[in-house]
Amino acid sequence: MEQQQPNPNPSKKKRKRMMTEADDEGWTTVVRTRGPMSGLQRDAPEEDAVRARKDDELRKGERNMGKQADFYTFQLSALKAKRIGRMAKKFLSNKNKIELMKAQRKFTPY
Image (cartoon, rainbow, N blue to C red; front, side):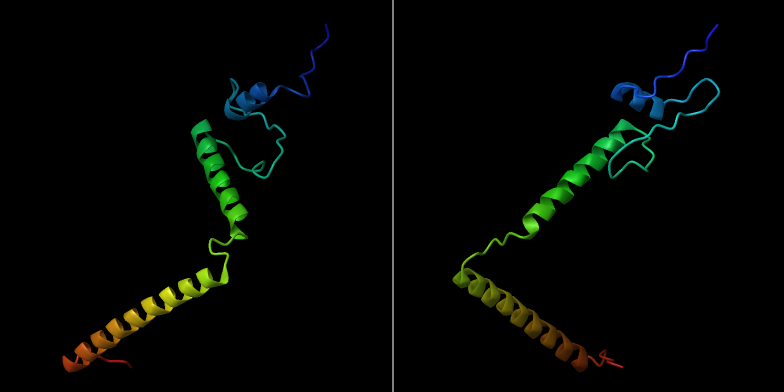
């Protein structure tokens, strides 16, 4: 009798099942996978779903990196003025805090 050879190209479903299930003796079949996450061990389908969701979020972020929300010059200058105003307020509040700490003699810069 001839021994039957295993199929060298199993279907995707069978390949996934082979990656996650162990046989009778506890061995798992190593299956060639393709893609950026091919070297990682996949424990559960839930983890794959979470990983896929994170990858999608990263791709969306990469797509939006080159786009600016404020296109026109006046929008950029208004945004810059707001930012400078916030920094000035924060500077004054920090300055007041330092003066208060100096008055209480709790300020030790060195």
